Image (cartoon, helix red, strand yellow):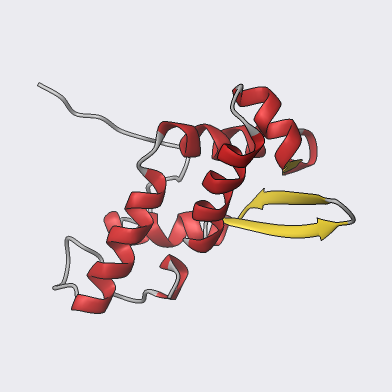
Length: 121
């Protein structure tokens, strides 16, 4: 089950069912890595919003197998889409997956995905 498959139980509005909590925890785990967050932002910032593993590895300064591992985790969690083109794999952000997790964490319709608010005191 992908994060986009969850429905209708925002964390702060209703009790999560065990299966929903498991999927949400897996999705948050997939995002809880600085390299993966950078990958998402690099892909979105790339012309056309698509990038190959090799380009991403060069930009991050990580080995291609490491980047492939991180991309796989993001894909399995539903945050990326991919397409094979010969020997290359192209990745792009699955906006619906990110919006689904945003809705689960904060269902307020006025919040935008690009806005991250931090309240630290």
